[in-house]
Amino acid sequence: MSKNILLYSAILIFGLVAPFVFPAFKVQLSILCVLIVLATTWNIQGGEMGYNTFGNILFYGLGMYLCASVQVGMFFPLAEWTESGGEKTFVHTPAQFFQGMAVGLVVAAVVPTIVAGLIGYAILGLRGHYFAICTLGLGVAAGEISGGIEIIGAGQGFTTPPFPEVGGLEARGEFFYFLSFGALILTFVAVRAIYSTRFRLILNAIRDNEDKAEAMGIETMKYKIIGWMVSAFFCGLAGGIMGGLVGYIDSTDVAFDGREMGVFMVLMAILGGKGTLWGPVIGATVFHIFKEGFWTFFLGWQYVALGVLIVVIVIYFPEGIMGWLREKYPEKFGEVIDEKDRKAQVELK
Amino acid sequence: MITVQACLDGLLLGILFALIAYGMALQWGVMNIINIAQGDLVILGGYIAYFMYLYGIHPAWGVIVSPIIMYFIGVGIYKLVINKVVDRDLFISILATFGISILFMQLMNFAFGADVVLANSGYGTTMLFDNNVTLPNSKIFSAVISIVFAIGLVIYMKKSKLGRAIRATAQNSRAAKILGVDTEKVYAATFGINAALCGVAGALISITFTIHPYMGLPYTIRSFMIVIVAGLGNLPGVAMSGMGLGVFEEFADYILGTEFRIGAVFLLLVLILVYRRFKLSRKREYLK
Image (cartoon, rainbow over all chains, first blue to last red; front, top):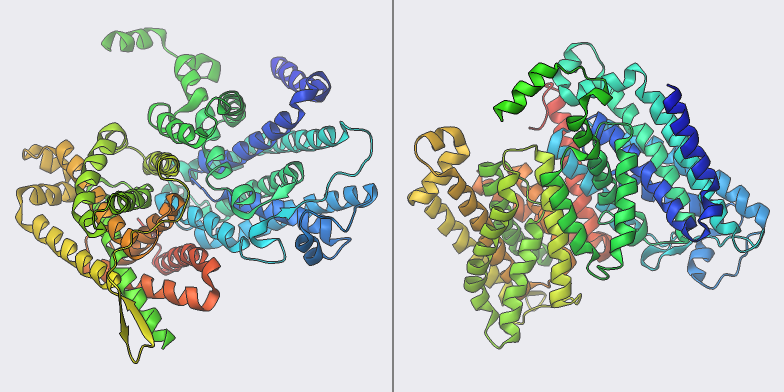
C-alpha cells in the first residue's frame, strides 16, 4: 500500500511540476492527458465489459462541439460567430471566457452521458461484431451529419474562442495543461474507485458470459448502460478540453475523427493491455511517445505507419504490455504459482 | 419523374452493391471474418480500371483485368494477415482489417492522388419518357455485367470442385478438413474470390460513378448492411436488399440533399440493427 502511495504522489508531483520543467512540451503533455482519459474510458467498455466499441468518438466529438457552442452561445449569437469564421467580430473578456469554459465543460460532460443512456438502451442489446460495426456506423454518421449543420460551421469548421490575454504568453498552455491534468486525475480516481467495487465484477461477468450473468440475476442491461454512461461522461469532458486546446473544430477531421482519435483510443487500450487499470495509461503513454517521436520521420506516411501498427499490434500483441508482464511475472499480479508445476510446464515446451 | 429517375438509378446502383455484398457474405460465411477493408478493395479495383483508361485502353476491359489482379492481391492479404486472425476473436479480425483499410486508403492516396476521378467509357445516355429520365448506358452495362458475374459465380460454386470445397468448409470446417479438404487453400481462394468480386465492382464503379481513395468505408458499411438484412448465403435476398438500399440512397439524396447521403446510409445501418435487436429481444434472443 505504501508503495502505491509513493507511486501516486510521484506521478502527482511530476504532473504538477512538468509544465514548468518542460515548458516546450506543455501542449504534448496536455494531449497525453486527454489520450490517457480516452484510453481509460474505452477500457471500461472494451476491456472490462467486453463490448468493443468504435463509437466513443461520438461522445468525444459531441463534447467538443457542445463545449465550444456553449462558450460562444452564452454571450454572443452562435450563428454569426460561425459565419464570420476566422475574422472575429466578438471578443470574450477573460471572465466571460472562463465562465463559458466552466459551463461548457459541464454541459460537454453531462449531455453525452444522457445521449449514451438513450443510445445505449437501443444498441447495447447487440453483441460482438454487430455492436462494433453499429458503433462504427454511429461515429461516422455523426461526423457526416454534423458536417452538414450550418449553425456549428458545417464543412468550413468552427473556431473556438481564443484564449483571453491574461497572465502572459505561457498562460494558455498552462491553463489547458492543468485543465487536462485535472480531468486525468478525476478520471483515474473515479475509474479506480469504480474498479474496486462490485460493479467491476459485474462488468467482467458480462464480458465472460453474458447469458450466465443474466441467469445469476444480474440486470445486465442496466449495468451495461451505466458502464457506457460513465465512459461517455469522461469522453465528453476530454472532448471539450481538446476542442479548446486545438482551437478549431472540424466535423470529420477533429471532432468525429474515427480514422484518428477513434482508432487511437482502441489501439492505446489494446497496446497497454485490455481489462487492467494501468494498461491504458501505459499504452497511451507509449503510443503518444511513439507517435510524436516517429510521426515526423514518417511525414506524410503516418497513416500507412498507423495501419501497419494496428495490424502488427492486433495480430502479434493482442494481450498488450500488461498482459505480457502478467505472463512474465505472475507473482506481481497476485497469482500464486506452484514453482514445480511451472518448471514442469516449461520443460514440456 | 424524379421518382422514376431515383428508382431506376437506385436499382442499377443497388445491383452493384449486391455484388460487393455477395463477396462479403461469401467470406463471412466461410471464414467468419468481417472485412472492413472490403470497400478499399473495391476502390483499388476501380483504380486499376481507371489506369487502363489513362493508358488508352477502354475501361470496360477493366472488368476482366481488375478481378485477376485483385484475386492475387486478395490471396496476398490472406497469406500476410488474415490467416493469422481466422480462428480468433471476431473483434481482432475487425480491428486488423480496419488497419488494412487505413493502410490501403493512404497508399492509394499516395499512389493515385486525392482527386475524385472517373473512367469515361463513352457509352452515351439513353433518354426515356420524353427525355424526362436520363439513363447513362454505362449504368445499364454495369448492371448487366454484375448480374453476369453473380450468376457465373453461383454456377461455379455449385458445380466446380473448389466451389464444393468452399461450401463444405462454410458448413463445417473441421469436418471438411477431416475429409481431405485443404481448408487453408480454401480460405485463401475464398478471400481471393471476394477480392476479385470487389475488383469487378470497383471497375464498374469507376466507369459509372466516381472513385476516391477515402470512399471505401461506405461501401463496406453498405455491404455489411445488405448481408445482415438478407442473411448469409441467401443470394436472391442479397440482390433484393441491395436494390432496396440503392433506391433508399437515391431518395435520401433527393430529399435530404447530397451532403447527408453517406450519413443517411450509416444511420440506416444503426436503425436496422436497433430494429432487429428489439424484435429479437422479445423472444430473448440476440443477433448472432
